[in-house]
Length: 281
Length: 281
Image (cartoon, rainbow over all chains, first blue to last red; front, side, top):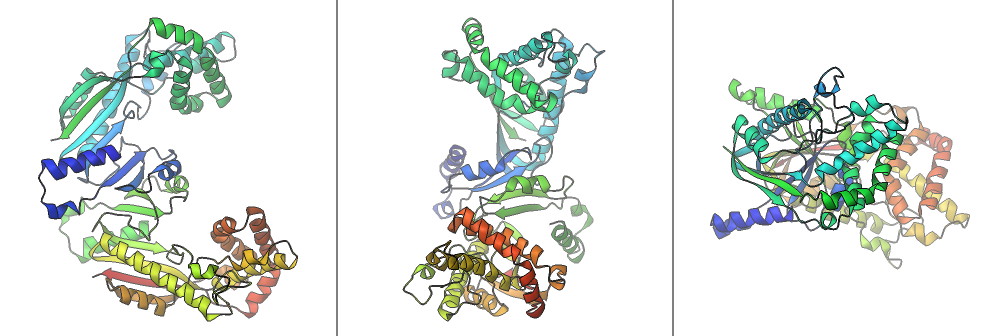
């Protein structure tokens, strides 16, 4: 946050050549938003005491309105819009080609309809996201979105394999695995361009895939990687499976770290993120 | 909060005779502030889902700045400004007449210097409070403050008596009790008038002592009353005494409920609050 504040302050003070007398009244108001179930207590206690901005917590879903009209000048979302507002219901129809048998995600799914259902939900969600933000962001205001693109994404399947191992050992009914799908979509630049243009309320100022340096990937440190992925997906897994089964599947996946590490050495995929800077028209 | 929003909406829509076309764009932004150690998670989860306002949490002390300049139109503080920013340090000087021997509060203190130290701290704190709010509230903006005035105040002494009982039983060193003072001051209308006028940035629109109906007091239900007081002061007690001693003193006070109930029947003091509505000049 401090970096964003400093960058905005520089832009305001130098590029816009603001007269000296107004420098002293430059104030920043930062709103940190997350789902209502987020741990805001820990967030608030971790804010620097000598911060140079006013800080606020905002509980709620960003697929809905969070702020009054035309009240936001700059918005940043990091690794969040890849989470769906809800799972597409087609994925729950056992009779449909979108029934994701034996898998928990669209990556590696055998059927293109499954991928299409994910894409369609991403497009619906982004339309809601853009419409809400378009009301809140001032004309000319900026929105910078960052989402994971490649790297850790393909590792998600190992959690699915652990659940299927448990099915094969008759510890778990397969329909419970088939009916579970991670509500995560990783948009490509093409996906992002399409939803921005369809919505029409923002213009793309810059978009790029950025390779990120990861010692964990370079060193094929699968154990640390899988533990990190587990921490982000464990909540939705526990919500679907009972927590004992979820715990077992996660523990089994971590145990497979050496095997995953070997797999990574062969199937190395440079991790990258999609960066997009949008401007409210 | 809903009541405040409704009252402001009514005022805006009817008294100010706003034209119809603007009615639909009336939006309310509510900031709920408390110390950073407050449980904001529970607060956020208890907000109504279908609320008609945007809600934000604001961690920090209200004796410091919390909001950007001229960003607040209406401020309400209920039973909060009676808590000091810190305890006056004179109360910690064993050689001074402000050493509050055998007591934990100014109410019932034997020495007027002790009361004066509390009053002086209240005045310093309110000056900080008014100066911070005067920057944040728009000219003409309102501030409604409510503080307890009488009723439960005199019951605080029973917690002090329990600590002194423990001193007499040699379970506790008396200096630990003497050096503890509840950081709470209950201003009178005269106290409040003095600090508002000294500060000079707000005008008093209305001030009154309001008797509040309390079945607990009417029925001399000392047990429930003492448990309620315990919940509000236990934090500062634990911070000073070790938690086992604090726990014992509180439990002993609750056990005395029957005795306190009898005392209440004789010394009945109608509970009242100080209500003050201030306007930013």
